[in-house]
Length: 97
Image (cartoon, rainbow, N blue to C red; front, side, top):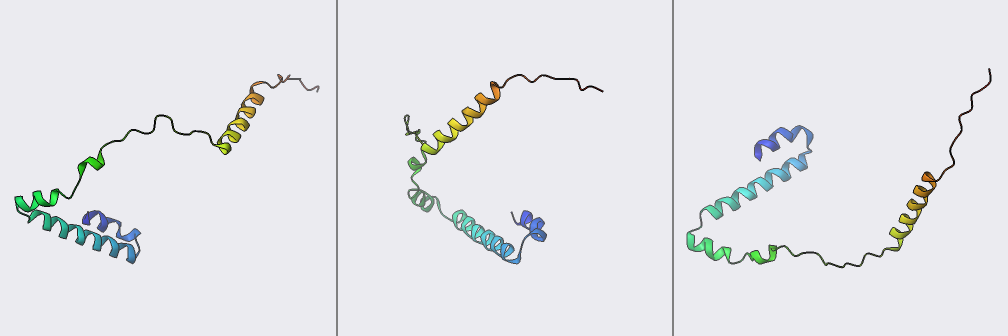
């Protein structure tokens, strides 16, 4: 990631560069800390993460779908579609020279 930030430095402000450098340092410290844990410590720390909370929950099968503004826009669009499809044919008339 540090290489990518180095390539982007000309496009970033000093504040952005500082933020990225601090973030990279913090992440490297976390990685070092996790890599230095023993197996027992690693398992103990893993208990704090509940993977069941990441389980997929399907959406409500019957959500409330009525929205007054949406219905107004839908009706207006339908009028435009009907108007477009029901216009009278245009006759092409040759101009006299």
